[in-house]
Length: 174
Image 1 (spheres, rainbow, N blue to C red):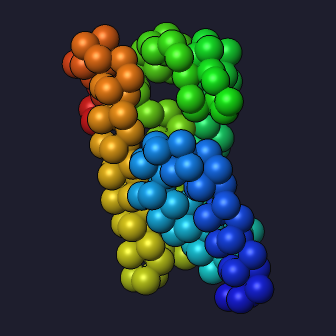
Image 2 (cartoon, rainbow, N blue to C red):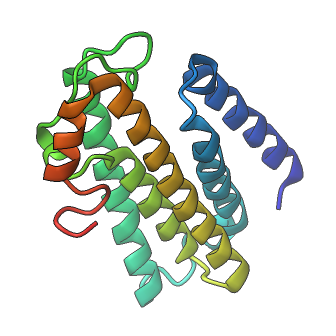
């Protein structure tokens, strides 16, 4: 692994975790840091394998997950930015967004990170990389749970009703 790239990337992730959430007492940024960090480490470990055996079943499945990740992330970001009436940053919304992709899942951006991490793991699914993938999923789960408490504090019963009508990450399943 490229140690200078690891250190630089980690400092950047810490900086953005602080600026966008922890500084504003939005503590979902703490477990989210571990999700971003595990994805970054997986990327550094797998970058040389990115295009090896491009038509193997694992590579094809990996690319499918990476494309789904891009879709979920882009759709979630754009809809939240356009509909959320944000203050300071796109994720600090003043309006509960329940339409578009948010009508199916509450956390499309976190779904995107799960798909991204899993897609990267599948580039070379050896045990220690699988463990990093599990760290990513666990960190995202904790991030979503923490953020949901913040959203209940912000939007009250409207968010509780929204939780009953949608799934966290995968439409109709979970």
